[in-house]
Image 1: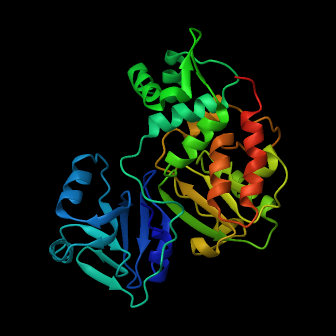
Image 2: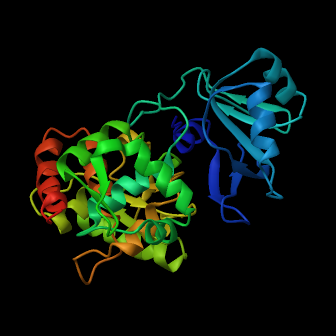
Length: 327
């Protein structure tokens, strides 16, 4: 469930700056006031149960900004009473410290893929790991790579059924093409918050420029999408940049201007999927002299999800790269 938080806040004429902690934002309101908040994972419906559930798992000293498509009338009254802060898409409205900022023209946030139930990050990462591997991988090695337990890897392998097998030397994909197709159907996307930026520079140039700026901010950038695909399996002329980062970054001093995601030439994303960096480090890119790339399977998914007219053909070239190695 993705809500374009940045586009909604900008529609309300609210400025955004990097906060005091890794995941916090400093919101500058039209009134001149500034508030430090930490946006939560996007919710479909802000209810009392959802607020309690998110609050019970938080340890940050920064107050949460609950983000959702809608909110129940009772919880809206609670927010107006100053009990918590909330941003909703339908209708577009920010309630912060009891003050309401609203618009009559809500921004429609794009949904990159269908919503899913509980995210199966470990199972999806095990699938990616086996797709990226050139040979069998022992379960303890996979568990260490993903930062999870061997039992979780074993459960994931069992759920993948006859798509994977253990011939005694470790887990391996029985048919990489079949496993890749299954993975694409199941994966709900990296989730998280997306930020749109606009630049007149060529897409590849602005993407690598933004990645270097993110490196200076210790945001651990991973280049994905069109530019990464062009580096891994050249074919498609990049039409939009995509970078994963682990914290918000401000590219305003690097030749970019903020833009709604649907109009952006570059998107930076703080993903919910915790495995992106682990697999990118474990499966180094064959490209040298460029910023770190997301793993090839993640790049494949991003290219397919872009919706460009030539995205399927471009993804096909990546698919050949992924399944090329012998099982």
